[in-house]
Length: 77
Image (tube, rainbow, N blue to C red; front, side, top):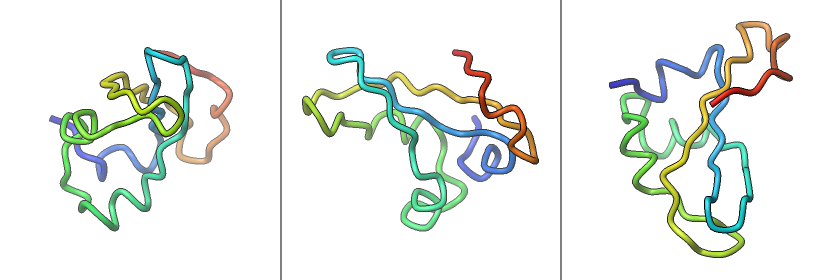
């Protein structure tokens, strides 16, 4: 399983609420500080709750942005 520490250099994490369609970038630096770099993405997925509607969501998008962040406009799922 991938950990937060595995992806921080070249990826962003986005939580997507299936209920209200809100998408929010997750603060990976804060997640590492609070949970540790070895926390698996599956564990984060189980903790996500939408700030707008309060629904639990397991939809996390991992977006490649490259080591220099030059690919940040390209989103995939």
